[in-house]
Structures are given as structure tokens and as C-alpha cells.
Length: 119
Image 1 (cartoon, rainbow, N blue to C red):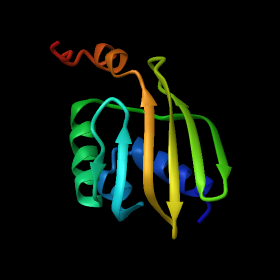
Image 2: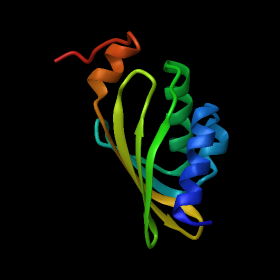
Image 3: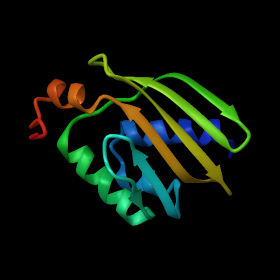
Image 4: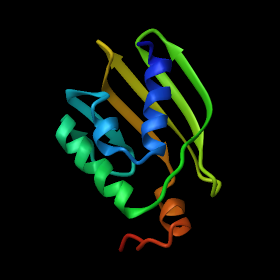
């Protein structure tokens, strides 16, 4: 599966809030680093991260662009509330080995009426 195809599958599962399915796209020792939090290491911890996130808010990923370069894929996305972000995926042997995401956490929390972090 190409990085672009894998990211398309990732978006499909994300939009279904399928933590089990999306976690199966990751290597056992994968790292998911959303820059607003500490890196999450390991497929099982990534699954728990998605379970928590999907329980917290209804999220929709609208693809703006997917780029591919070798074993890397880049996803530019937006959501229906106007939030935008991007994700970088390193794909090794048809699994996500590393992912880094950039998005505005404060805007996300406000849009979903979730508690803001304390200073």
C-alpha cells in the first residue's frame, strides 16, 4: 500500500471514530507525536489515545491534499468547524512507523467546548 493509500484509509477510519481499525494501521513500535502533546509510543498506547480522543469530541477530517514522497505521506486537512492542520506519516512495510501532527489545540478545545488547559 502506498503512503497516499494508507493515509486515505487512515482518514476513512478516523471519520468512523474506529480506534481499533486505525490503530491497526500502525507498527507495533510506532510513535504518534501530535506537537501539542508528548509523543505516544506503541500501537496499544496509540489505540488508547484514539479511544480517548473519539470519546471526547466528534471529529471529522476533510482532506485538502495528500502528498507522497518515497516512504513519506503528508496530509493537509480541515474540519467542518474551520480548524486546519497537517500530518506527516512515515510508512514502513505498509504500517505507520511515525506520525507527527500540527494543529491548534486551543482552537480545537474552544470549538468543542472542552476545558482549557490551566496555566
